[in-house]
Image (cartoon, rainbow, N blue to C red):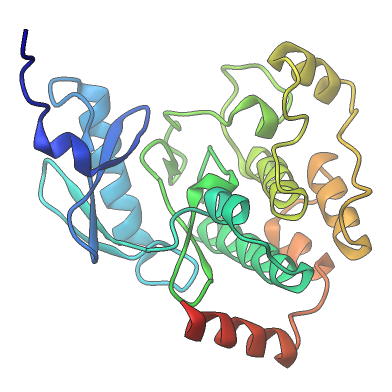
Length: 258
C-alpha cells in the first residue's frame, strides 16, 4: 500500500535541538524554529536567543544574526558547518587547530564581558565561516544578565557540581577546556566511556590524557578543567602566540581550492 509523501520541508532540516529545529532556507540563510510552537519553553528559548544576539551585536567570533520574526530566527548560513563536523571531515594542521583554539577562547571572553553565560559550550556550537574562522552560536538556553540558563553542558563538558546548580563563568571555562580538547584531539573527552563513569572521574579530578595535545595548549586545557582560571581573559593570556603569516597563507590557499 502506498504511503503518504514525506513533508518536503523535512528535507531542509539540518539539525534538531532540545528546543528548536534548524532548517536551511537557501545558501545564505538558516532558520531556527521552535520544535513545538505550543510549548512555552520552546518559545522562550527562541526569545532569549534573539535577545542575546541583539545584545552581543556584530562580532567576528559570534554567529551572524540576521533577524527574528516572532516564530523563527534567521542566521547567516556558514557552508562549512559546525566545528565538530569540520574537524571530523578535514585533515587540519596543528597550526590551524591552534588558531581555532584561540578563536574559541576569544568568543567565550567576549560573551562573558557582555554578561552572557553560554551553558552548553562544545565544538558543535561553533560555526566555521568561509574564511575558516569560528563563530559561537546556539544561545537558546543561555543566561543573559544572570537569568537562569535553560540548558546544561553534556557530561563530557560538565563541571562537577549539583545538577541544579547554576551555570557560571567557571562552568563555561570548564566546558571550554573540553572544547579545546575536541579541537586538538578530534574527539570528545573520554569518548566511548559510560556517562556515569565520566562523571565519577571528573569528580575525582581525573581527566583524559593530554599527550596528543601540543605542549603550549596542554597547560591551558588542564587549567580550564582544574578551575585555575577566574576568567577567559586569563586563558587567552596563557594561550600560545597567534599563528604565523605562513599559516595565513595556508588558509588563503585552501580557500582558493574550495
